[in-house]
Length: 121
Image (tube, rainbow, N blue to C red):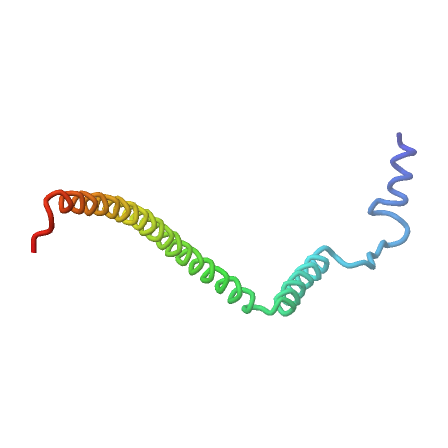
């Protein structure tokens, strides 16, 4: 075990022969590079997509959808009114045909009685 400890201290310990100097960057530098890259990416995306114009486009779509829904509601009301008018129109035309038939029968009856009694004038 002493041999292993001596070998470890020889290459990695405080008493090693040559001082070990790190030439690479620390984690702080990597963190700063990552943050700057993220901010740059967000800025490039904002610039590429036109920034606030996308938000304006989305709000315009929402307002047009609201207008479309209100127009569809008005269209539905007008369809219902048209159906009611057509139903009432059909009913009125049916009543008119019945009244015309009844009027024709009454005219026939008047002509029949005029023939029997004779015309009074």
